[in-house]
Image: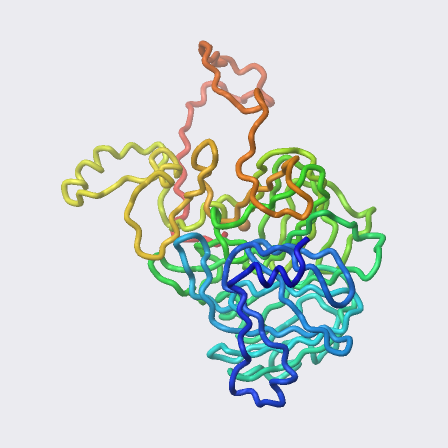
Length: 470
Ligand SMILES: [Cu+2]
């Protein structure tokens, strides 16, 4: 079992840093020391050693913030600060986050807990923290200007309230949020039920992650904050496939996944091989009578959803956003579709002028994964995920649910690729192919044609050019 102590020992990158020197000695004594995490790995669950017991969550490519009990109050220390986030191996982004990471650490508490959160601002501008979805005193809601003065750079504010209802929540700034959310300031908040709850099932695995998006030009490090729709990096917890960790579970585990959306568009989340039910929203657990089975659930902007299922099919199951652009990622969107357009001749002429010129997309976009084109420094290579059978051709909001018989309870290690039982993989047909039979009559048409001698018209559609929101 991972104890909290082992969790600290085992992770060398967890650094206990001393609070800002500008804070007075007296104030310092009252502040819990901030705990920082700079590794983008999925950290093991933080088993509670103080306070009420609960079944902890695992944050995909993230971690849970440790706390201090102070006379019955659970105290956390969030530090808003610039961070460097490795979004995928070889690609680093300069973001803003909390305690060394973007997204910030997950905060886990129990229903009825009194919670005190110290928020220190180390950003170059003022901030605030809004506790998205919580019932709390109005003055603790974190809307700068409306419910509190904003937290100026170098200052520390204290938020305190009771975690009144169990569920899945988020936190993010409510001060210059267009900039601060585009820069990656966000995190998860879980309030566990204090006792058995009729609508909250006990589960074996409980995963959380946020959907987020960035616009970072190839070769640069900092997101463009003015972008509203045309993001080029679609990520989970600021990670991009193949940099997103898989969700590793044991066969027949009851699994819960909590997903929050802090992008500016909706994401239809699709799981292969299993049906799930949506068991919770921002508003709390859903009554049993209102649940229905799904394989895709749409998560709108600013929403969170809890999905639950029995992982009773072994294998490596894709789990992804169903907007295909969001799983192919760093594409320019203003590229014309060239599928089926032969351009050998044009290419020949161009290569006389530009020897390295390469024609893209003639056979579809899968060519991109195989291209060995030199990329600018710090650019995410497109669609580089490799599977046991070749390129997965994905590169954004995509991961894999790995269901294994031999996975130990509580073990979140990646069990490598699935070994398919003999005869259970799609295979090539090598027999003779039949000639297709083409229909030559009008019979069987839903509506008889008024005139049968109308000449066939080939439809030529010119799509509007320029970018339209999607
Ligand atoms: Cu999406």
